Amino acid sequence: MIGGMPASREAGVSVTARVLRVLGAFEAARPQLSLTEIARRARLAPATAHRLVGELVAWGALERDEGAYRIGLRLWEVATLAPRGVGLRAAALPFLEDLYEATHENVHLAVREGSEALYVERISGRGALPVISRVGGRLPLHATGVGLVLLAYAPAEVQEAVLSAPAARFTPKTVTAPRALRRVLAEVRRHRLAVSDGLLDIEALSVAAPVTDARGEVVAALSVVVPASHDHRRYAPAVTAAARGVSRVLGTVGPSA
Image (cartoon, rainbow, N blue to C red):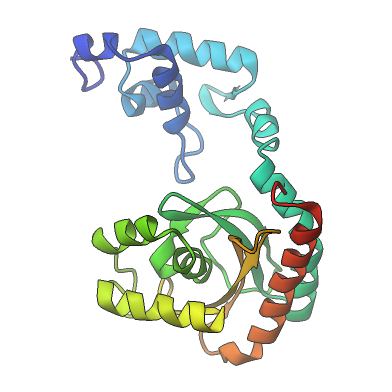
């Protein structure tokens, strides 16, 4: 056995897969790892992990800091070339900033990546409600405002996959029953607005709206997250206006934005 994995099985894994395992060993909760931890989490032999980590450090995908490793800036530079996130973020940023100035609360922009909401931008002030979201982070579709929007307008096969899978319950308010979640998604489509009231954090209220491209397809969701004691109707007009503004910009630059 090598790192909990038979040597024969490691031998059948491609070099690309091993490199991706090394990078995938890092996560928000563990941004720095020792070589031993990388080998264990990537299920690689120590010698293999040492060689791959060394090559990744030389290229800039990883950085070494006092015996531990972390994701390097070179990987971030490559990630910024992703057209879906970059073009969308550039179009949305002025409207996100306006929404923040109007509310001084947490403002988010997210896209759907598989069965999760991937956050591509966040603006937050010192006095805003503490939230767990972060740029580059992922949260579940069924328990977040942006996630509900993205799920409501996702292809039917994506919706069915999410609805048929066990849904995590984060608070007593989290909607996990497929039938109840279908009703929630229908309301999102009817009003083009999602309200996540205590679904992920019992103290947080999220109001989200869809962002469309030149073809009229929902490509992202924009939201504001405020204390649960607030009335969502107070924020709905501003969120909707910001989402429409981003959609107008995307409509003028084409679907590749």
